[in-house]
Amino acid sequence: MNDDTKNETGGKRPSLSRDAVIAGAVELADQIGIEPLTLRKLATHLGVKPMSIYHYVANKDEIIDGMVDAVFAEIDMPVPETPWREAMTVRAYSAWAALRRHPWAAGMLDSRTNPGPANLGHHDRVIACLRTNGFSLDLTATAFATLDAFIYGFALQESSMPGGGDPELTDVADGFMETFAAHFPALAEFTAGYVLQPGYSFSKEFDIGLQLILDGLEARRAASDA
Image: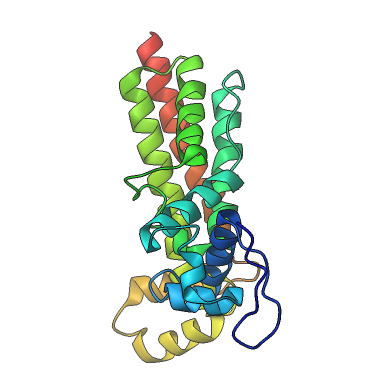
């Protein structure tokens, strides 16, 4: 359906489609978050009247379903025949990058009761890769749950930190040291000896944590083959 009619300011408003509505919602959520997103705000963002959106989606839930599917479409899907550790590493970094672009999505990716094709296809390919590489059903479940908990949790923690975990934390840490060092000596030692050192970045902990998880999964898989 073409929506090339006049917008509220008298100008020609853009053509709408379901994909355009979803893309606009993702863009707006990246700016303001998922909770404040309303159909009225989305309509303003798209330059159309609110009722125009209902030609393409029934309600906000359908929009969020589409938004989540759009994020899954950005994440690299494993090729089943790829060595599992390589595939899971690529997938983890791709998912982390997507969640950095869309911080609102960290708590939403596994929340939908009406998952879309990108969502379902992604899950199917991850499971297929693990199963092809010798993971039992129960270890596949463990691997999927543990990896996603780490990826989503890391992205959520990173986005919630002052400065997003970047070196801007120095000013915050300096103030903390001056005020609380006497009461929290272990935390003060860690902050001074690690966090405030040149080159510190919270993001580098992602690879270390991911490798620890992959090491543990490899040990479990090897033990099941023994």
